[in-house]
Length: 381
Image 1 (tube, rainbow, N blue to C red):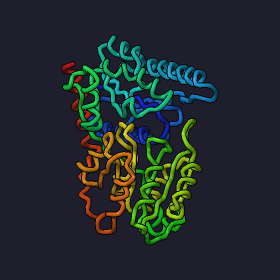
Image 2 (image 1 turned 45 degrees about the horizontal axis):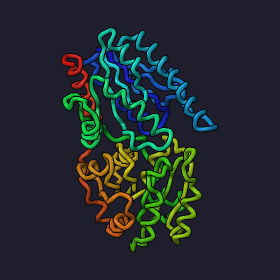
Image 3 (image 1 turned 120 degrees about the vertical axis):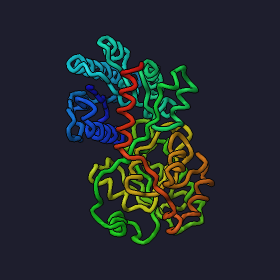
Image 4 (image 1 turned 90 degrees about the horizontal axis):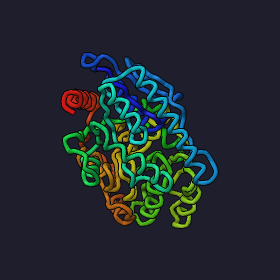
């Protein structure tokens, strides 16, 4: 069996997911001839025993009007689609496993079917998690997901959403939770790292980490801290610079000042390289994801925190609420409810944070289930 994984992202949780999945699949080479990974030109990972093809051009919406950005993205998509089809024509893989809905195209499906191959699609998120232009484009792209031979969902919530909104056969949707996302060892002790970040070395520390988007609910965390009676808590906020149309970090800082809790926060804006992720995770006693109801995905932040055994406090949305409960790695609260989050923060102390069971899936198990799905697809569908 020859398998081709297709991953269009250069960095972040989905790129790390692709690298870990490819690595784990390749460790089972006795069950397959080859594992190939088609990725962006600057894809940073090199999983062993995997044939990596760094030939996808980068996607960038550019500047200008909404229409201009949409046309730029469309042109980039078409270029990527051509690059994918060229490699498929060369390799003729038995399985083309597309990681993310937007990389799938009708022309790719037709091409793979023409020589007897099969297409498996991993659904990372659903259209409701997008905003503005990206929501419109994502809804257009996601119509094609129902033409795949099989779908991989990260959890039951995503599977149920697909079944609720489509006629895709339930037996062709496989729930395969993925393993934790590990980025190496921290360089200092937790107390020392809190000092580096300008925090009190001995105080309980919460981490808000990742992209700065409205659906991620940083404002909800700030309101919750203002309502919480647990004044011993402090928070480290480390976020990427916001995309166009999102509120800047300065807006959130001003909100914290207005609510008289700015002294409880330390703010860092900019891309966090892989080598520094462990330091942010190790500095925290817990990680908080106060996401809004529009969030309809699994969280790479959650999966990274799980790798470092950092307990979670999350909104009960998408996959993350059920994941936290099922794996015993933290607590879920009502979404978009600062009072509910404040009550959870009031509950936290050193002993409570140790009361987690950490029943986390691993990558070999995920790879084994993925191989089983490939074999089922080729023999049945």
